[in-house]
Length: 465
Image (tube, rainbow, N blue to C red; front, top):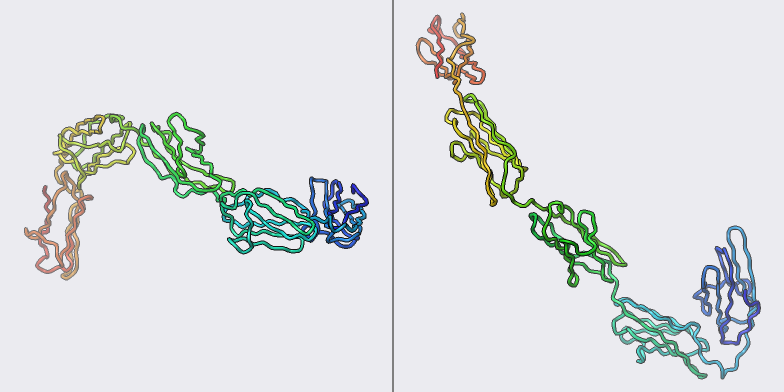
């Protein structure tokens, strides 16, 4: 220790200090047994830097004795002692003195505040705020006394508590005072977004705005991010602005490459928050143009027919219509008009008919103009007379037994078929069943129970258009 012997008058403070390097554990002892703790009545322990350790003892609480400091680490230990001698002081010179002066305080609105002081020589205490005495139990003020210690408690800090706080320690021999400044700050709140930006869809060259409302104390810093790139300040076509808690990002003269993610981040010393949304930029409308021309088509009657076209610059407001010989085509049982949403348009005809011969036109139109394509449609009939590829064969059956006759027919257009028995048309019913598959040309007749009068009679099959 710097001083191996210390003599102090009763009521005074004894200071001890030591410089110790590389210590991981330091203890102060009194008379080799009593371990001293900071906050213990009459004891103050401090460390000014990494290696300097200090002890202050109130001689009103401690008599003469030996003060020891012990230090150790994983590999070694040491200790050093000093003798403290306390002498009596003449009563007339025992004016109160503070062990520590008040220090300036930063208090937060809405939070409690507690201030402690210790003064020697059995004083009485008074507290003043901006020169006005404070009263215990009034306006959320509490003043406590424990021997040489006085505590001022304020339940809830308010703006009017800002100013100079004074504590006066007084006894018969005299008085001392200590002063400090109280600064009052708003309650700290983490940065928060209460109303984030909303999604926007716009067209190239237009202007859009995104806004957000933020809160927090201290006032948060606000950052806008476009497609993961921070917008530091207002730029060529981007303007950042704020009014109170509302912050705005405005983008003028939109470009298609600005489509994507819009994010806002807020941050202060106690927290952060973020919110994001989407910006969709549609291409500006220009005169439509087809990528390729329609091709003429020749098709056999009854066969399907399909046409496809695509636009170089599709926009939502561009309308595409199909016309046959000047008449607009609409979706119905034979015709389907469709688009895929990406600029590809299709016309599907399930079965071409001769009356579809003529000129097919597809026209695209918007506010900037139009474009059209034309093609010729030729529908051929391709007629062929009906003919058998399989004919019915005779059969011998017993009365009451079942019998079946079948045939296969082809022809264009599809033939109609009738079965005859003894020159009479046969009608399908409960006793006789007739089938005809127009796709395969297969036809058959089944008699479930034959009768004698049907024996050796002629069954004939006729077909016609």
